[in-house]
Length: 144
Image (tube, rainbow, N blue to C red):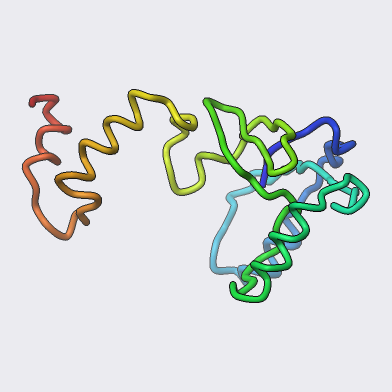
């Protein structure tokens, strides 16, 4: 998660050139055309217990018993969000820097967005573009 909380004593890692690792992984299948790949990430070196994340630890432990762990996760249990802010079960506030993963970054709990989702959910929740729909054309052409 790219959420940031200054209370976590986070730091930005140094810039790293991942091109040699990229080349080993892709085995010549892809070419970056000479462009440098640069990345930086937030390093959180603090264990959850040191932050007093008792509620979070209980939830993470319970989840670990029933959900397959597919990738490393940040030891933060989110409880709610409003706009660009997220709140964990301990009440700490975070700036949401990853809501764009698989969704549009529209913010959390915006009343207009919530009402639009509720209205649409009464009709259709999701339609693949394998099918045709009037709504697709309406969005494209901007008509009602």
